[in-house]
Image (cartoon, rainbow, N blue to C red; front, side, top):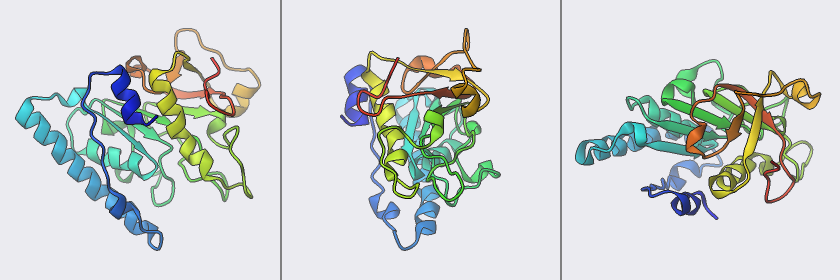
Length: 229
């Protein structure tokens, strides 16, 4: 099931899909594809502004979801919109996006609430996603890298990078909750040093997920259903 179909199965909502294949399909010049993100983000912002002006749609009710480069596109769109409701970044791309400069990547100022799912964080020479905190709430399933059930070829696998999408789609209409625990790092989490009482979080789509802040860790299963509540 796609994210669109999953959302429409649980929400009375308008879902807009953005096809920027020609702008993204540039294997010989990744930097150009990354640069195109800013243009696509600006176009999305114009669409949201048009909807707001013509229909009275509230920016606060708008929600942008993006994977990899698309996560930064969501950030660029939110940068131009006053009080955009929410952005979910699915393993935001690492290459060409500096963790030191929020202006050129997704960050917590791009919407009223920004949550991020990290599944292929950059470590040494491998990892297609940013491993650092970017949003209000950052979720690191299985430490944010080397997802269970994903094959690894010399430390490299696009499966890890795309698994963020799978977790998010499953979270939309699953009866199982991706419960996550606030923790300083993956090592402490694995050693059982972290727990939650009132600050527990749930990774994924739920509209109740817009109040958390910090770094959250959890484990998943190797195959669908990934949730192991």
